[in-house]
Length: 245
Image (cartoon, rainbow, N blue to C red; front, side, top):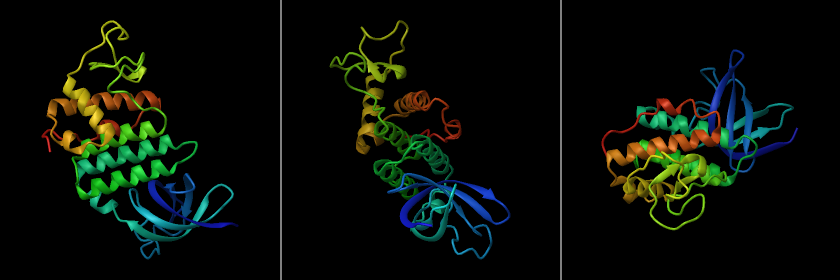
């Protein structure tokens, strides 16, 4: 059977039998892969903790009929232990890997892999608030999947200007002429924060208020669940910071 090597981040795991585990991986070159890690649940497993969720590893696998089999695993990013020490980071990471799992249902991409690894690394290092990191990740992952929202020009007609009506079904902010009757308005500073999160402008995002962060998180959650249809089961459990940081 063909043997191959690839870098991968572990999205989720399931028990198999008494000692094995099925791992769902987002790989750098082969997209999403489901594989068996034999004996990984034994105390003396050669894999150790390298095949736990949020971990990044250099793997050797061979192709099976329905599931590939992991034969070697070398750690590249031991983010799991650091992330699980903080509840906010842990809940955010769960939402990230669930989103990555759904966004790469048909096929993976190098950009999605690099974005997820970067987000998990940032969470483990506490570089930004966990909630901000998650919101930025979701917007950018959706953009890579072809659902880039507009937070400047009207998402429907393209009219340039500062728009404060947001309709997730239409793709972001819309002008007054395109806004359906009764569309709620949000503060211009919230729209600016959404744009900063999409662009990765962390200086602006960190200076934002709790009110803007709360509104932005709600819009991002709605936008994410609209495009993923089934939504993210882990998203309601995400711990949101109440103090700007």
